[in-house]
Length: 99
Image (tube, rainbow, N blue to C red; front, top):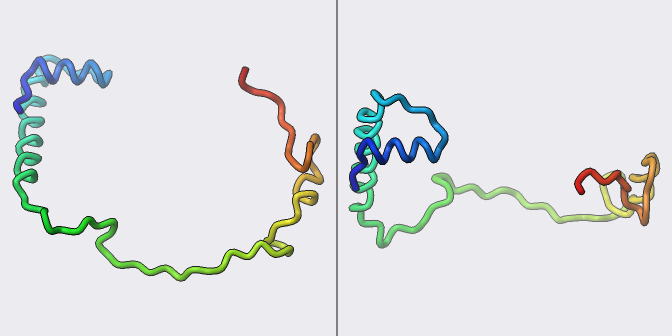
């Protein structure tokens, strides 16, 4: 694939980027260089390479979820909404902001 001045002009218009006429040829060359690198990457054989989500193996410690009543546990909805100006069924009531 090759990028010319007209393609750069069209992409700049779609991206709402103001590009001066004298920069179109330079940008076309830079984009063609980027596309050439992408074509080189497409030639790499990755058939037997497993996908990675990280370059470092990380095993984070896990904890049990505990919803017991306590300072950080659940079952305190009445205390949470106690200072609210308006509540309904232990939920905050807020004014409608979108019509």
